Image (cartoon, rainbow, N blue to C red; front, side, top):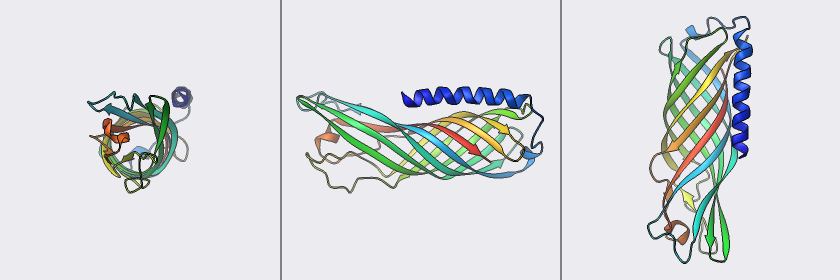
Length: 230
């Protein structure tokens, strides 16, 4: 819910910012003619776990499994290559993202909440398509693939029935897609962006305990609001 409100505020901010800049004097008029740009990004995210329950579910032991989402943060580097008037290739690496998602297990007489925390180092290769520039703004869509390594992976952590641990594989692959707004200021370009990141396949590490036995598949998802500075 917190991220939904943040996203609504972000969209309102983008609309207001774009309206103001559309009437301003043009800035950085030669910026888009340069072939290579560098920058950095600051991000807020909401991590989610899409869960597919096993065929033997529900049971007399575990009644239900649900996921709780929490806000997180990220920081990273941008390398942008211009390949045409409307097309760019964008490499975003390294991008460090801190994400938390909890799994809540409903037992007949109790509940158990298991933290699933990650510290991802991401590398994304993206294609960016931009609209024609209107004074100091241009909108864009972006998409591509990503690889993530989780420095906080718990696959080697001790676990048991009284010490529940649900781990994700440390290396995952996925896709991401989103849209944003390029805003040209006097000395830099500022780009608010909203993006969805999904993981391919099953990211869960199966350890033989009931906390993973009743889950067939876990696919991490990230909804991210970024502020790019170039």
